[in-house]
Image (cartoon, rainbow, N blue to C red):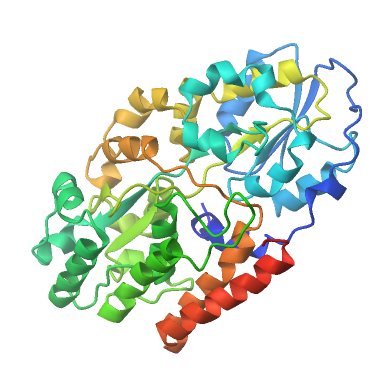
Length: 425
């Protein structure tokens, strides 16, 4: 797994201005395969699904010619290009979680999965995740592949040196608020001066925003990035910097910091575990996972969708629901670190076993309960673009010593300008 997955939010911000879907999707008529065709084109990206499950789908549906393409590069841009005509559009496609909101204003360019039977399956999948792929007029365009419940990753050995709790249950209990977490960071840095609590303050901001039910734009398309909920997340994010427990790592030195103990904890989704393993294989057995301070948050998680030009909607939906049933989502967790969007998978052996990298801990005990309690928040199509100035200003605080209050004012001002250009009130 490369660093782009760990930093997918930054990538989402950079691509948020991609051309709109309306012009890109064509007129929605016909399909290259013809009505009721059993030739289905299937697009996804490397790591977006278990390749083994996709291969088995071809065996599961022997009468179907499933033409799979693993698309490299900017998947969203290539999908938009492919959807210009029915002849080039896929019949089944992945859409990344950070991109789904930008497709919802043109939900009619995709099939409503509820009309194909998803309404009956919905109770088996997390309601808040389904809402992310539901348009304001109630069309469900995405079947959730995975989610990104977040947690606190910490070095047990460094916590022990600092006299902090080391058992995951105790850490979850005693570091249950942001302030308690930061206080622990101060103690840690005193005891182990080379170690800092976090890699950068943007990570805290992301988590804090995700813990709420509102983001930067409301459902009436009005900018709310200057309101108390965002200001509170900003204040929380800045605190580690003012306390001197921020590692100020905003570059590719993160791998080394994980390996050598410069960073003693990490805030990230379930898939972040694989990033830590890849960055610091020599730290095996030293890491543990606890609940995220101040409540659950989500980061990432994608969907499978059926463009309106799909050659055979019923058959395509059968393929999708098989690939994403609980058993196959559990396989996706094993094969590609994709945390399941269906709670039924949380009781399967693939998720209930101990993880050797985390000292044999059963990390599902942390991620499972978090997944089911993540707050549902409306994410507007322009959310990523409007949020960008907050992250750049937080980086300016760390890199340039910019005054946090001045940075806040500049972030809000710049965000308002972007919102206006994006048609936000």
